[in-house]
Length: 164
Image (cartoon, rainbow, N blue to C red; front, top):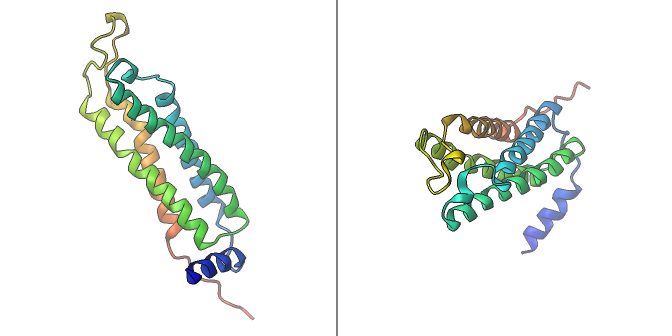
């Protein structure tokens, strides 16, 4: 327990790491904004799931809420990378990016699996909603942004050489 406490204390005091390059932080910010924008339609019921089984509706709404919350937290933490760049920050942000990455897999497969299917069977014919693979494009983009951000955040950068 003492090792964990000393690690955390020293990690916050370390200021020997360079701030992240702005392009890396920009990608993380884009991942956060993307997670928010992808989660909002699922939160507001813009898609078919409100008309189906309550368990499915609850799961989809929870997915949208989680995506929205992780996106907001990622935006707040990404700004700290301009000031400091510690291992603890990278671990927390990496876990959020990995969660965003993994969260995009079920919607991508679902939109491709149900492509062309009518998803609102019990509703009036005028409000029929058909699934389309095109709805998976924002998820694919967010998946790629999260993967690239994870790579850039965790790859080893060369240390500066002393020229003195």
